[in-house]
Length: 339
Image (cartoon, rainbow, N blue to C red):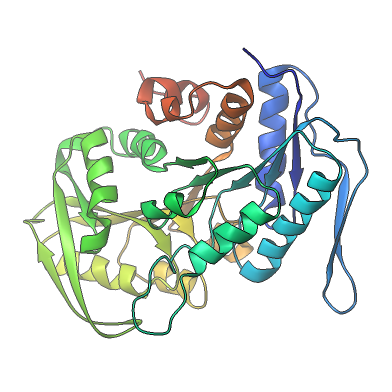
């Protein structure tokens, strides 16, 4: 049964192009004008965030589109304050659509006297009145358990599988999916299964945080087209080094598929000057002009899958159906034309 309330979209400043794209697609799918709720998200001179919603949202099903990417603290506070404004305006339900969930890398205590910041952020989101989370490729799956509210975690791998089958349609038998570390094997295995390709691992040893001392390739990549799969590309140092190691071990080409292009510091320059033929990222984080201008970086849209997920949540239908190729293909057919 469809909900009796109307789905309404509101966005902070973290990724307005993605929010507008979701609104346009929802207008297309529903056949009604589905613009973003008219609101202002501003800052006082001292940096305090102020939110004012200009439309009536009483009894409505609200979706806040706001990744908590750089600047993570500002974008997180925007999300919390928007949620508080909606809760105090008697919204029926508040869902936070967080394409990139910041602080996800702090999901456990790695040494004494350190925080579990992902759990703290989960508590803050729930305390602000958010009743559901929709996100993509959490860095650690157990973060879903940090919440006492429903969490829908979408995956980029079905989208990447469509892209791979389009970009390498005549060379599918030469592909090898590579996990850049042991911790990412499950993610890489998922893509490998979808495209029916073998799996390899780059085992890395660190002398200290942020510095890789040695890399070893587990598996034979000789004359293979290697696809490195990971969830986050931050400074791209490890990624570029892994690409070089794969070529040194006999790989023919190296490409990378990364869910969230954080791309901080020298990342774009490193990727542009690396041996990688291409780096594919999603627009879960708004790509900078430098990223868009890079010759070997491509951005694939997440608006189609997020739009359908929002509609499924509103309608009370399955979100996990979007993990299936037969369900995802139709909403991406304008981008990937396949028989």
